[in-house]
Image (cartoon, rainbow, N blue to C red; front, top):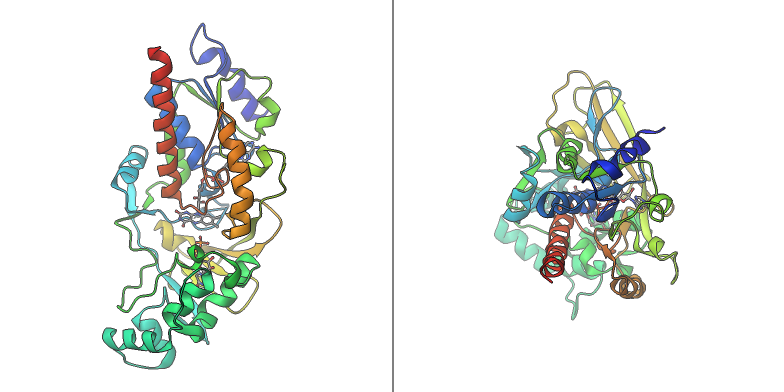
Length: 391
Ligand code: FAD
Ligand code: UDP
């Protein structure tokens, strides 16, 4: 018997004596599923079965110690940042934090320069000594005026002009998405700001920190409740018709849920190449982006990100974008939004299922946004629960 079915065997009778089955079937143990399982069990006293098809909890934020004893993120580097005190406080119930501000360099024209583009990027790239005021004038002089900023190309060329766009964004985006920036919504490259000061942090959010003992430990604490049972290595379709439940929370891809009724929603995938090298440090910062060379977009070094100290070796991950594979990124562009709207309408008409998370709502969300979305979904379920119990 595998670990997953073992935990399930005890579950049906163990949760609440005298009551069979579960109140909620939660599909997926990532941020969306784990937050909802936690809230439903701890906040509402509901009996929850979490079914996860991977052999671990945490979704794409899962981390683990590799064979070299280094804490790595198997699904690529995950850096926590948020402007929401509520979201930060909520997660702080399950973890302590280590302050961490992510820094990124881009390898361009044979140099490593700060990304997002800032004053130092321009001075280093062109061998200049401009002030903030002068660099602002420089951006104005090269920016292409646009009547409307619709695409990911528009966003960048309207701010920093075509040359910098070509150096920093065009190649990276074509690699990452398999599309030209002109074919992607403005929101994609708008994630990366342009600065005229020397701030070289990737994010400027109020709260920037990593879970002190890693994401997986945080998820373990969230799911550690007598009303929550977790079944790993199991597709929900294997159990949904066997185990009694009243309401489902679904966090997998929305098109898969409806058997691709309207066709496949494009999700961009990645191949991760993890390497441990016999060096104290591999690169000067957490991530180095390679917009114009190689098949990978970026290399991230975990010791920078987690703060782990370990002599003589370090682990890095290379990200190779690809079309096939696990669905990692919804692809923000008009035609996909239109297709998603059809699935969204089906989802809204499916009364006993709540769709939450990056895959189920087809939104290019960061972790904190998924937590916020899950807490909002919980509020709606709580109100419905209170209305039912009052009547
Ligand atoms: P997921 O984490 O994808 O969880 C969904 C779960 O459902 C998965 O575990 C899946 O196995 C399971 N599932 C799917 N179908 C089924 C099924 N049929 N049966 C059972 N289980 C199923 N965000 C940040 O804030 N900062 C970052 O630095 C950052 N870096 C990222 C780097 C990469 C490479 C990627 C891909 C994402 C990054 N993100 C980052 C985004 C972050 O990963 C997501 O916002 C977050 O993990 C989404 O949580 P989720 O629960 O919606 O989805
Ligand atoms: N991007 C780019 N060059 C870079 C960094 C980002 O062109 O050096 C573009 C690219 O399209 C990328 C998007 O901006 O997909 C968002 O970048 P972010 O770092 O937020 O991507 P994520 O961490 O979500 O993969």
